[in-house]
Image 1 (cartoon, rainbow, N blue to C red):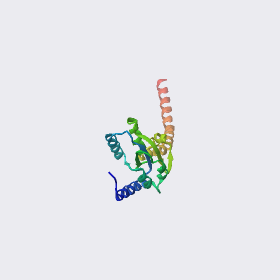
Image 2: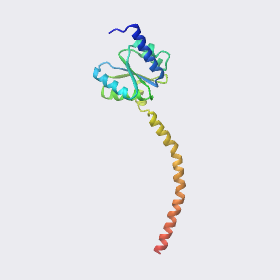
Image 3: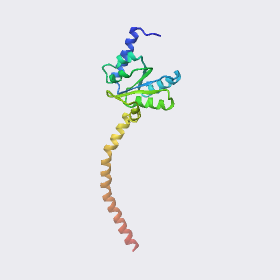
Image 4: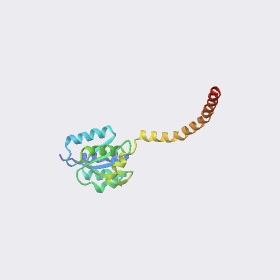
Length: 175
């Protein structure tokens, strides 16, 4: 079904709005996937805070213009699905990477983060990025480690004294 001008304008505005606030974007060729496969992919994307959309290439080029993902415009060729990470930079990469493990028909064509176009093989690296909660946990553990080590070291001095006194007491009782 052909889109009229108003529908095209609405799609461009919607994708442009999402692209302007997204952290990263993935473009993947979906040729060969069934409707059921795409439905599963959409469900996974929704549950992980990823905006997933199939958009005509000319509309996608207009939508990403004047955003961080303008670098992707030249690569919009063929049937592509666009995935934008809304919450954390690695979300779209995790969804697409996990989906490609089971469905070889989905082929990653472009990966972009912070206005930089990466090699499609970099999706694995981006997928391994920690979520916000994981990053905070790692930061807190890193900040806590020196304090914990100091407390353990300071606690060791009286502990060693107590063990020495107990050993002397045991030696006198035995002897």
